[in-house]
Image (cartoon, rainbow over all chains, first blue to last red; front, side, top):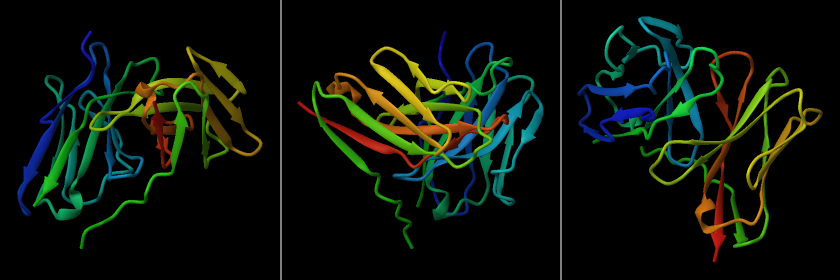
Length: 114
Length: 111
């Protein structure tokens, strides 16, 4: 049973470009969470999604950031017009329907904005 | 300008000794707590969890203690090994779906 998969593992974007980060949850998991981690800091919650629904986006910046989890395919975190401050590690986690508090994390995508 | 994160507190222990990592949590309504281990360049890895109706839980070489009175959580690692070197985070869940992470402690194990 493969774990949570994220790609790309490393992403370099110039300021103003778009970044797309993908996350495939563990098999049988229908809940996906995105977190952001700055160097030497803990993870900060961004958004919680179920298939085709955004459940909680209280941690998402109001502009430029969006997330989706379509019926088919991976969850996507999209950052438009990236700025230097978006440079961070972005982690996706997934959980089974009956234990949404038990979240398993992927290896992360490290975004560098130049 | 460049943003600089806070330096993580570091715990340095000798191989074979016991390690104790502490965490203060913020929300008295939190009812579920998890310790994660994060190695360099990797995602957080689940270690052990505890619910608020318990004050102690043991796993293999690890024990978590919960003191709700002072909102304090600790992780004890017995017979620490070089492979335990990592950053350790506590996380709390307050009946929602969001985990709130603590600031982390870096554990360094000296051979």
